[in-house]
Amino acid sequence: MVAAKYAKAKEEAKACVLKANAVSLTADMWTSINMDAYLAVTCHFLNDSNELKTIVLGVQHFPQAHTAAHLAAAKDGIMEEWGIRHKVTCLVTDAASNMIAAGRELNLKHGVCIAHTINLMVKKALDQTHGLQELRNRARKVVNLFRCSTTAKERLVQIQVQLGRPTLKLIKEVETRWNSTFLMFERMYGEREPLSAAMSSLQTDVTPLTSAEFAVVEECLGVLSPFNEATVELSTEKKVSASKIIPLMKMLDYTIGKQIPQKKTTMAKELAEHLFRQVREKLNQFQMMSIFTLPTLLDPRFKTLGFLSPSKADEAVQRLTSECTYIISSHTPRPPATQLPTAGEDAGPSTSTGMFSAAHYNGILFSHFITFLSPPPPPPGNLWRHLDVTVQQSRQSHNSTADAIVEVQRYIQEAHIPRKENPLTYWNTHKSLYPNLFILAQWFLCIPASSVPCERVFPKAGEVVSKKRNRLSPKAVEQILFLNKYN
Image (cartoon, rainbow, N blue to C red):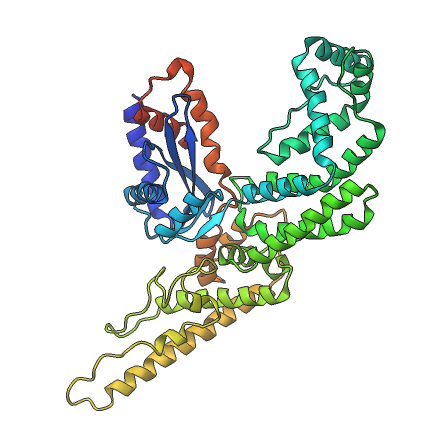
């Protein structure tokens, strides 16, 4: 029954994906309790109703070595099976070198998961801040006491009840995830009164945090809170997220910069300074990457206001105009012998900052491609054919560029919509007014900001491949997970 239902659901999903004009992918690896490795790939696209959809393309058993070549071959096979090889706008993964190299081998534009990026940034800042590691170690000892000792745990519960507070457990820090540090400190600070009372009645060598240390914790929480909020917001799956990356990093830059002079404790101020430098560095990088700049421009909530640098915003508008020119030109009839670059082809080597070619994204518009095209040789008896064809091509190129500039500038100058409105609803009602930008919006607004949608497959995978079901075949695992996420 599972196999039959899987076959039917997969055909329905394929039909839905094939209708999409463009798709984006996320990918990640997972290891089961049997030490079997699996590669999960999810697909994100806009459907006929212009709604953001996600489908699990595969959770394939991956017994090979986790090299870039093997990963690329597996992902290429999945793309070919689903018929989306030439529709992929972007591949989003973590920052693992083999994942990045696999994207290069597939000649796909690659985006590093913003949740992983923020995690690495904050972890680095936490490690660089003098004295904070010692404070974290002391906090971990307190948490371990109340998580390992039943006497301590019951005493904390009794005091929480006496004070009329909810009975909340302390949260343990996980070394690899910075937000667990934030949650540990946040819970400890919120429960500092019952915690201090409980520890004063226990015979233990663990030293509680002092009021001065809790003051440091409070200020550090104020520094880290915006990053936790940003991670949660960018990890959403059912809303447009890639267009938020640059504006959200801009807001982090503004918020942390404003906090630095306000911090009273040395430790919190140093933490804020480290984070400010890293945010500014990453923001400057993101403002040069078309997979982030174009979604920001195409989001009517942000447009150019989402950028920190006005010059980078102007460059992004030039790129958008260039892309719009390409769309218009591709709809313009041309002499049969005139061959223009197809989507994804480059006039030169591809770069990580552009959708097509480096020249394309450096402001060279579509008309400049024409100069490299050789018109067909004139037939006998038609002396002026060569010149006529050249003039026709020049007129078409000029018209396409002019039309693109008008459409882009009219859109940019239009009033922004409120931040909490859905940009996809806007494009659904404005697709006739901006038909070429609407096509680009379908290409770029389906890019997820993180690989979290793919990682959400793994908790369910852990429930499926359990100790009591450890003999499930990899094929059965894939079918069950596909049906679970598809429904």
